[in-house]
Length: 421
Image (cartoon, rainbow, N blue to C red):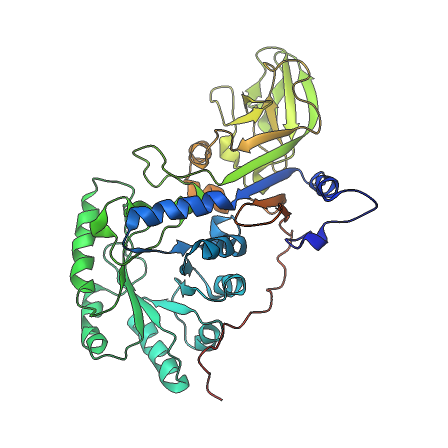
């Protein structure tokens, strides 16, 4: 079943709701993405950054939330610029949103120019060799679609050095250069008092000011909250759009986006002194009732959130109450201690909440020993997905395929500049 409602089986006289329920019953977990919450987060970030333009980073399948659905919803809300990591990601986003500007953060490689031109997207160039190869393609093809220049101000990852950037200033100021954005990336934006922020800001402000007439961008999600000096002409939030806290030293200003539920496949009782799970690392200290749920680390629920006799692991909401993980999380299953629930509060087939209803992405990241970005991008391919909001007329169920499908045909943008014959 895909995002096309026709893929929901329509057998007999069942209603659409009954058919959808029947389909969901075939999956151990259901992941719901609230597109309205993403739009609300984008609008909050946009308001915080006024008068800068607020773009949206939708790389890594929009941080696991669905790049096509997210881009379409944000485009309808007014977002005009998107960032992805690869050409293949750009193809998917372009198929969803024909008009907005799309930048590809991964840079430019020789002989890929036609791929950029075909879908009318722009490379983010971070090396003098890339710039030379891009120039050759544009000169030979007549392509004028534009590109960004990435300058390294301290990350030491991608980007021109400051001296290399200085060397191309005469070329930029000569005009007709095709550079539509100059950008850099903050190292420690989530740390409000990091001295690195001030050093990067000073370096970027100095070099960007020499790119006459070219818009500048520095702030990621957390960078937006460092204040107006960091916002320049465009900000490019990513994780904050999807509910990750961009201000970890304060309360999260963003709405939660993802809700993850899993099905109870068995209720069982164990006696005091018995162990649960691989390795027998968790021992029942009383007669214990367990709910076994159909999600595991193969679904992106990390083994690091396990519990043992000396350490409490993550919690799951069962019948409105937080209940702890019991023992090691395995590939497909998790045991939950539901002893303190009222009798019959949890039964086989009931759904429990792993993410949502007060369990945040950042809380789960703490138990996983990682960050919210990795939690979202690790959510597996065995969930049924429901997208709600974003001007969707009715909930759409979209399970992730076990094997990646072939990429969809690329929709041509309206009146793209011609390629050479």
